[in-house]
Image (cartoon, rainbow, N blue to C red; front, side, top):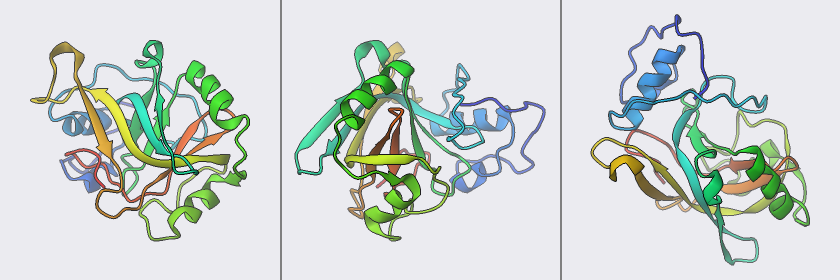
Length: 219
């Protein structure tokens, strides 16, 4: 969650309805969104990610990123696992200002370096701009087909089938460690997002029909 001026407050009340999150303006507003999304558990830190290609407002942490399950272009399954030493430095987050709560993967420098070496270097998939890439996955049928993507160059890694993360949610915790969650994507509409990588090793979730309301990632 990136810090904003705490003196600015959203005039509209933040509720459990995702539509109200789009008016969040201050650190207090974003803290309220985080607490509602985590079923009453408050955040305990604000982390700065100085990346000009991320949305300008705050991102709300969903959890510490552990694994990404991908169906590769040749049809084989692949699990991209965040190494144990880096699991507390990599996150999956959503943009509360986006009408469908678009997700972002925030990786540590070490993990980005590894992703570049293993997913970008030697990857023979064509290079496309991220907006064009997202639009090419399902045309305009998916919620996240268009709009708001930075103009970065990416290559396809594969279809993103599942995200695994660990976080704390009230009433659903495994003690101090939190609980692990695995969210399948495209369960209802079969419109899977794609996982893409850029030359810096950043990973991007493109297209897909998911949302991130308070019950969690859906579709």
